[in-house]
Amino acid sequence: MTITEALEQSQPGLMSRVTDAIRKQKLNQRSEQTYLHWITRFVLFHDMKDPETLEADDQTAFLDYLREGMRASRARLNQARQALGFFYEEVLNKHASTANTAAA
Image (spheres, rainbow, N blue to C red):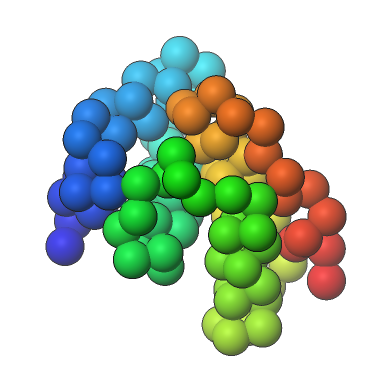
């Protein structure tokens, strides 16, 4: 499954909303790729549920999985946390509650 398919299946129009927000913030291509990667992994981790229905605990569960299950480095955890923060604040217009979760 591609990034576009995953995001569109979780919420129609989500891929364009994410890319529009990225371009509005004038992020570089590498940041765009990184954010899309982590946002998609988050959506897939939660079985393609509509991200609008996911809460702070769901973000924490994903980051905990990366840290404990996947043994992701601190840099990767920070990337994922920043991508989720961007996603919730800039795309979904919600407050992201992932600030302290990646500190391990």
